[in-house]
Figure (cartoon, rainbow, N blue to C red):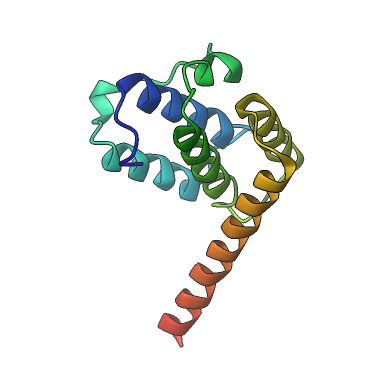
Length: 132
């Protein structure tokens, strides 16, 4: 997230993250932790940011033109989607919509999705090693 320098990108990303986290009707504590970590990494205090749930996804990402920023948005949102261990239909729909709106190819989508799944598996493996 430290690659996001423009405040409008940071706010758009946080709004998108909140929207995705709420997609299944409730924000899981792990998802909330991810959002707080995003805010910390972007050096945004809770008092400086207020989620605007009236914005739609198209509006949130309309300012994003740079390919690197698009990739950051997508990968970080995919990590958030997998944070609660449940990749449900609402989250899948948002991920596919985000892919389409960002103009990412199916191969790019699958590459990032595969990487996110492997990262999640490595995290679980690491926790098992720590606890054993």
